[in-house]
Structure formats: C-alpha cells, structure tokens
Image 1: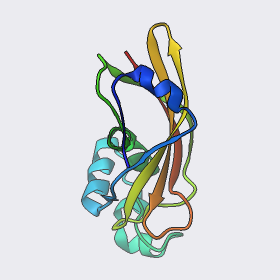
Image 2: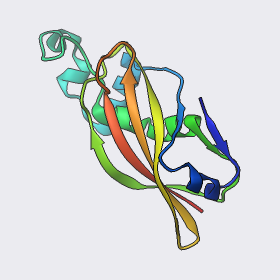
Image 3: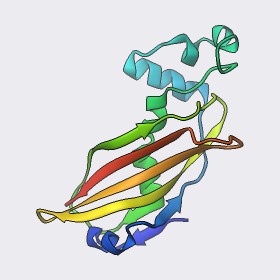
Image 4: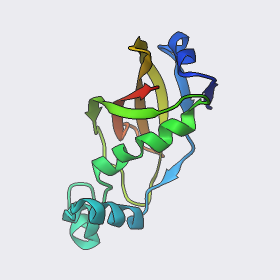
Length: 150
C-alpha cells in the first residue's frame, strides 16, 4: 500500500492515517558489514558469527542505526509526494529498538502520519515508521521522523 499526493499540503488532511506499508527488505551480512565499515562500529554482535552465536541473540544482528538509516528509502516507498522543491530530513522525535533484526531476516515498515503543519511556507510532517521483522512478534524499531517539505 502506498499513498500518493500531489503536493506536501495534501498531507494535511491525512494526519492520523496509515499511509503505507513497504515491501520486504533483506538484511544480509554484506549490508551489515558495509554499515560497520561506514560507521567504524565493528562490535562483535554485528560482525563475528562465532562469538555472536553464543551471545544474547543467538547470532549476528543488524545495527539499530542501520535499521533506522533505512527510514528515508522506506518512507519514499510508502508515501509519494509528487511536487516539491526539497524534502529535508529535519530530525527525529523518538526512536526505540524493541527487538533485534537478525542477519538473514527481512524487514518492512508501516508508515503513519502523526502530524503535518504549515511552518513558514513549508510543510513539516512527522511520520511514524514501525519496522517489522518477518515472523517476529515485536517491532524491531519504532521511529518518528520529521520531514520538512519546501
């Protein structure tokens, strides 16, 4: 499910609604290793299969911030705004990681529009992304991301 609007102003009446659910994204070890290299976060829970097998999750898990970093691409899949001059990642209001994302799993996000308001000629939209791991009981991440559309 994807919601398409013509302009950012068209988001205003959609506050409180679920706007879409993305396709599944595979989280493989190559992606985790690239993220570890990009961030210099080579903690064993992410990159050492032998040590992680005896760790708290029984195997390697993705970085929480890797999961969060997928927000822009997942958001664009669930919500399409056709006409704007710029969409800026303005910030985050709240982020939680209730459960891990095991390497080899798939995740997707459901996007809800928490708020949208006119702010000095721009539209500030707050989207809640709830990341779900295929087959898991609890979400892997719940994040409110703020986008400023000009």
